[in-house]
Length: 121
Image (cartoon, rainbow, N blue to C red; front, side):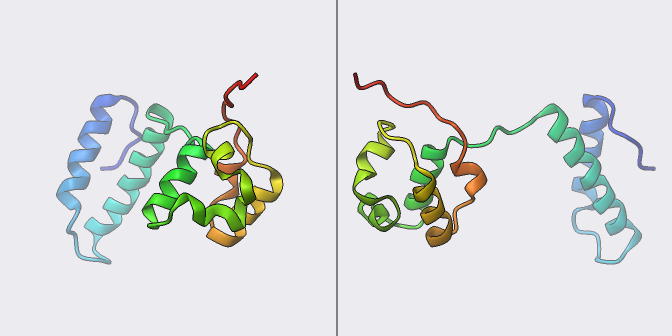
């Protein structure tokens, strides 16, 4: 029987039950229970184990590395300030964010977040 996950014990029990139901045939009552259980688990995790949004520069570096790109490949999107942006000396501008979003299909909601800049005074 499905019930709200109110504590860590309920959460652990739900995880174990989800694992047991993992290979349930699609359309079966067990698969339906798994789907509902997954929603309960996701809700519990979002409240008790929130994942912070990534740092924009760390995300950008990860994205280009994952795509096998080099930092120089960012020139059409960032212009000549690649090193300054990646070294946190110069912030991403709105135009840079738009270029990265449109050209590389990176999520603007991550790139627009504030991040610390280095003080180069």
